[in-house]
Amino acid sequence: MTESNLGIQKKLIDGRLIASKIELSISEKIVELKNKGIVPSIAVILVGKDPASVVYVRNKERAAQRCGILSKKDVYPESLTEKELLNKIEELNNDPLIHGILVQLPLPPHINEKKIMEAISPVKDVDGFHPLNVGKIFTEDALFYPCTPYGIVKMLDYYDISVKGKSCVIIGQSNIVGKPLAIMLMNRLATVSSLNIFTKDIKSITAKADILISATGKVHLIDESYIKKGAVVIDVGISNIGGKIYGDVNFERVINKVSKITPVPGGVGPLTVAVLMENTVKSALVKSGINIKLI
Image 1 (cartoon, rainbow, N blue to C red):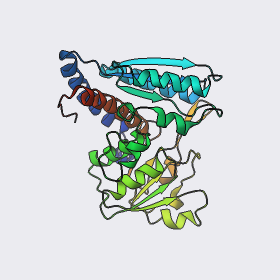
Image 2 (tube, one colour):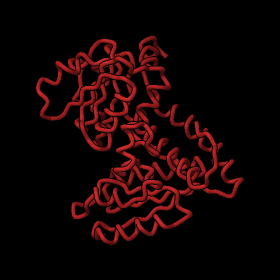
Image 3 (cartoon, one colour):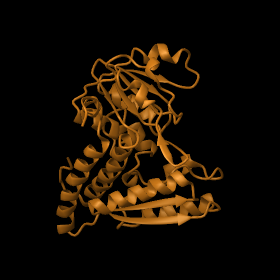
Image 4 (cartoon, rainbow, N blue to C red):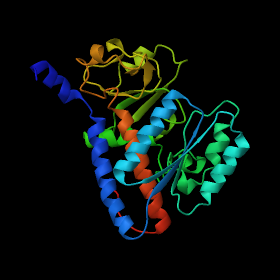
């Protein structure tokens, strides 16, 4: 490995490595649970054939298999009605053998995503999207935290990157990533700026960030002009163009300026899936009343 490549490797936040450690810990706990007659299980619902969703679901199934979690997948045509989906969720809510329920987003336009998320039992809401779990982020006692934001927090912890007193800038205000992540970072005493498409002079804000998180899905939006020297950059964006995966950040143009950066792929994505597995096991623990520390 050349000196240049070694320098780049030292800057990488290795999501796959952290995810593998989480999965290993989960696998050990699952052995304990199975010895007590409990098999953690997750039900995944996929509506339609969105290519990205198909890939995400496949990755989650593989992770479940690696950990020893029973994964049950239901695939429906895009024509599935909202009522039919709600009925299926109610069936899973009442199934004592199912610990986690995941409805893969996005859903077809005729189905109200908010209504679907609210229909999932909060104790089986392993995606962390139910209003009860989202609301409890503010008080830091949610049963489940949304997987991607929590995965980012785990990344920062693994590399001993403290956010206390730091300027943390998040580009993107989605309910899935941007909004919950902002609260989670504020809970850790970060100074958070939350930006959106209407924010004026974005570069003047991002260029002062100690930690910059981009979750827009805009390919190579972020170049060196957005980055403060020595900043930590977390790239949440994933775009598939011609079979190749790109992030929000132009890696080659910012690598010499950052202190740490997530690659795409291999950064945030694996952590999102690992946290989903952790949440599923946590749900099984809560239901069984068994006190086993996960990590």
